[in-house]
Length: 425
Image 1 (tube, rainbow, N blue to C red):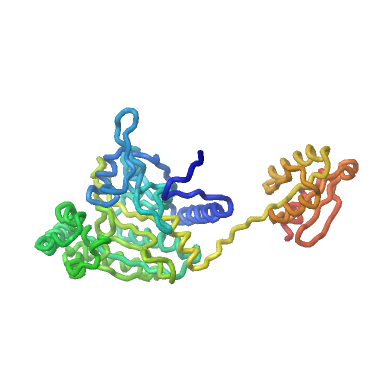
Image 2: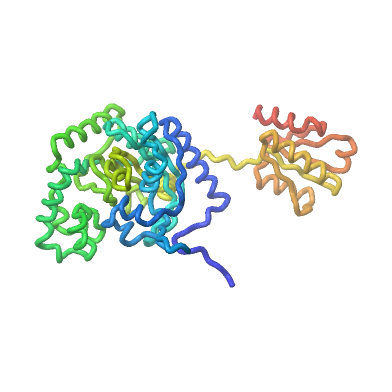
């Protein structure tokens, strides 16, 4: 009986995984420069966390969550996004009590959403996210946006578009909500079943509907920017000032609402404008979510964050033809030409690896010519040749595969020789 991988998942094999490792290491270095620290939360959480934190009107909660009962009859859900889990950890571990505020965290890991798989969008997706918890300074909004934008730019992407909007404070959203209900209610029967439910739950989500986005009433819907309070207008203006001061180009889009219920004030998306990227151009998005921590049992805490899909990031790099500087070279291949040389070869491999060099040998008893072909495929910089004659002399033949230079080197000096010659290359 054969087994196939579940739909919407993928195996990341050698040759591909190196790109993921490079991107993840690059992200961690970038986060360190911004003074964000890694957090790792469980892959599954209690279902109620996402119902309250993400919002019951969202597609994620209504359609996409992988929810199951455990043996204790508890409802658990594979995390569909990272923000709710980080907020839960912030509350449960009382990080709001730390002297250093805001608490600046990042995560990288798998998320799970039951949706139609397509290029760059999987059912098991991988997400990098930032959460800055504990500050309502508009400068932190700009910093988070800057980090997201620089993640793409620093990896070599050029064809990017940053879109921002303000969803206002709660009073602004309340007045906008009332206007949206009045606008859509007389003709809500013309909309999809989901939007009919959203009219009561969260009419703002109608603007984000994929099915009805071309409906004339969506196009003519009242914009949130027209309902902003003076305080919200001032806040949004300050965010723009910080972005301008840091030469971050952006476009204001009053229709940008994001797909999660917890956003307020600043919202943003980064899109790819590369030809051939696909119909769905959004790479990532985020915004301010000042109410979530309180909603799940913590103190009133202003927060700002974003999520970046690693799959879509890699797809954008491929679309723009960006080659990541990934080295596939092996420092040294040890060619053992007789049975007696295998033991000495094993000792030498250990010494090379302990010295921080990458090294390998043949384990299929291949002839010398085949072993050299194997060294070529592994892009070995040096080949150490051990045969009966070399063992009797207490030496090894060390060949530089790029220059063709070959030298007799004492077995005790092989590691030092390769380190010196490799450093000179």
